[in-house]
Length: 132
Image (tube, rainbow, N blue to C red; front, side):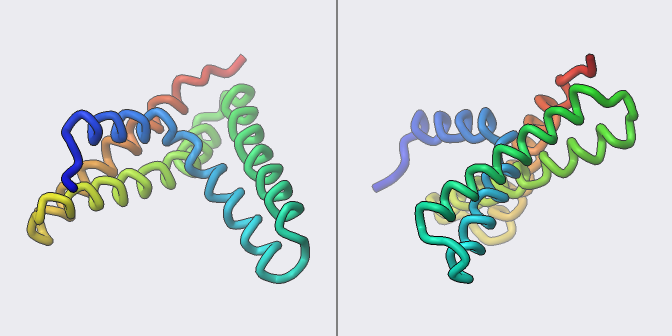
């Protein structure tokens, strides 16, 4: 069943809106998976520990951006938080290009453009956080 243009547009808008949270979500998923796979915690406890780790990453990143005036620190924290967003944009756009039976090279070019757009949107939202 083909994806309608309005549905694809809504999903692209939703991804760019939530792209800032890609790094904390990735950290939460990795902590949860690691704790559960190595039998360190039960399922529910691993999920709670993963959520806590994601919240810590998000809070730490936003606290650094809100309190630091050092441009190098702000750029590095923004890049660490925006890079997973760009990777998510690449994957989403590559998935959408597979729906239309696009060739390999145009699909990867389109996905690279999508990564730049989503990563740029996340970078812009992170840079908008002004230090107090």
